[in-house]
Image (cartoon, rainbow over all chains, first blue to last red; front, top):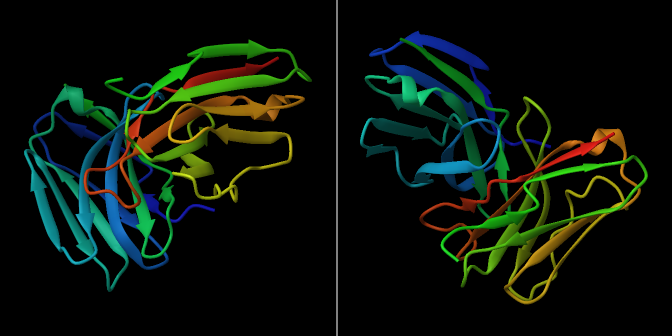
Amino acid sequence: SQQGEEDPQALSIQEGENATMNCSYKTSINNLQWYRQNSGRGLVHLILIRSNEREKHSGRLRVTLDTSKKSSSLLITASRAADTASYFCATVGSSASKIIFGSGTRLSIRP
Amino acid sequence: GAGVSQSPSNKVTEKGKDVELRCDPISGHTALYWYRQRLGQGLEFLIYFQGNSAPDKSGLPSDRFSAERTGESVSTLTIQRTQQEDSAVYLCASSLAQAPTYGYTFGSGTRLTVV
């Protein structure tokens, strides 16, 4: 079963605009991570936020975490064509060892 | 090695045949994961190895699937009597430890096609 569910499933925006993707999960977590996948192959780790953190930044990425709502958001500012990819959130449970991935958001950046 | 290496990168097999997929984790990474990703879908957890502990096999979909890992080195995922629904990309990831600070490193995957 999948822990995280991303919303929306697909997103198309104009280059230069900001892209926001959301993730909801069901059980308590140790941390939540966001990954990018190009061309359906290997995933690249983008950012990790711990359960005691509320917001984290990395370059053009901003991640928020609301443990009371069991949700997270990923904001990509000033989008570029190269940001076109699928984005997945992944959760690591507070006592579990494995990471559980959501179904992903397919982001398309229009030139 | 510098990254997680998976082989083969592509495999086409006939229905009913057995296949073996290989994953070489980053040296020193004690945790190793296998995931399956069907076309256009998310990642489905299969199995997790952590050091010398008993593996977490809770994600293996049937007894046709098995995986082994010797110590903290190479892992092999074996699918016996392959079926068409086994067609997917099989991804391997490794990490230094449980719930790591810096995330998990993925290999490029093996694309399995059962015809």
